[in-house]
Amino acid sequence: MSLIVQKFGGTSVADPERIQNVAARVVETAKAGHRVAVVVSAMSGETDRLDTLAEQFGGREENPREYDVLVSTGEQVTIALLSMSIRQLGQPARSFTAAQMGLRTDAAHSRARIERIDREVLMATLEEGAVAVLAGFQGVDAEGNITTLGRGGSDTSAVAVAAAIEADVCEIYTDVDGVFTADPRVVPAARKLERISYDEMIEMASLGAKVLQIRSVRFAMRYDVPIHVRSSFHKGEGTWVVPEEEAMEGLVVSGVSFNKKEAKIRVRGVRDVPGVAARIFTPLSDVGIVVDVIIQNLSQDGATDLTFTVPRSDYARALQISQQSGESVGAEAVDGDDEIAKVSIVGLGMKDHAGVASRMFSVLADEGINIQLITTSEIKVSVVIEEKYAELAVRALHAAFVETGAAEPQAE
Ligand code: ADP
Ligand code: ASP
Ligand code: MG
Image 1: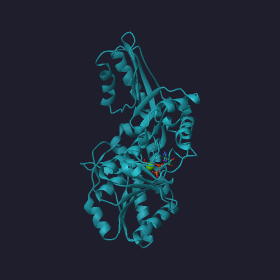
Image 2 (image 1 turned 120 degrees about the vertical axis):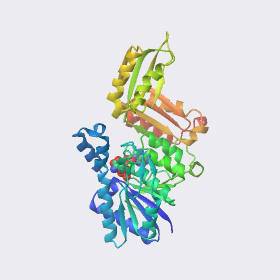
Image 3 (image 1 turned 30 degrees about the horizontal axis):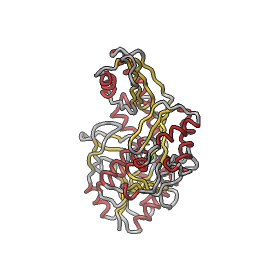
């Protein structure tokens, strides 16, 4: 007998028929003798619908607390419906909101972090032989306010529950067969990975692969929770997200990701003296804007340019703030561009192979794609390019590094 957490995403519970399919799958697992906790998202499209509604009343920024009260309701609908559906099949089940299962977070609305979960409540339900059906995405802070965990946050709820009850596995059921070498919607030749390491998955998620929310993978790594990403439409094996030593498939590049949700800001002609960067970036961090790639040009005649990226949703505010700080440090000009994309290759094998980055640049050059910014880490290389070339770049890089396997420059 195992203790299993099963998480079903929005498309898996999109309509009554799919909810019944999910119920059947959960009951089958329970009838096979396992104890099951199920975490569900809102029906697909529902969180977007609620977000659009909120926009008509000032949106998230003006009403962070009420925004979370609103957008967390989608999950309350699905836990109730799924519990009813499971019970119709003769299996005891009980739904829990975040407050009911004691899922405590900090008070950061719309991006709250999980602090603790009341393990006893869940274990008592499971030990009775009932299925615990849990609302993903939502939490409560120390004062009892409803919080949410950020878009895609049900993945993190599921892994946190799995860690709290020390589950044997956290199964993430979704609308694709597993984690692919690139988004299968963009790259038809992408293939499913059998296994991927936590580190690679964290990079892929943070670089745009929304199949798992990045925080869920960090959590899984910290608490040693094995994740199995698999299809909710059939029973085939998906992808296991596991520690590095178990993950090796011998690939240099395991995945190609892209992200169109960033924008670029350039502060031109600032004096190259101590303190300038701090005066530009501190006002941004003070309002919670996260800066990603930062490039500073070599200075010429004592002046330099600073270019950086920010989330596209913060672009207007970031540009305005940077224009003010640019003025105060005597910058020549501050401008920006929100039609960019970041395209990345990720792979543990890069640690041991030289020349991967230069090969990436050649592949892009052959397609006539200009590189605006470059950033690297031990297991990834990212470039910022014009947004309209994102798909072309992803396909070309996938063809060069994954499909041909010709990623080993030393063998050329
Ligand atoms: P859910 O609603 O089940 O949480 P999501 O839409 O959040 O599902 O995530 C699944 C989607 O992630 C897939 O439909 C796919 O288009 C996208 N995706 C992006 N990159 C990848 C990748 N490398 N492997 C698999 N899916 C990916
Ligand atoms: N319903 C939330 C969202 O759409 C959480 C999730 O699906 O994971 O982002
Ligand atoms: Mg998701």
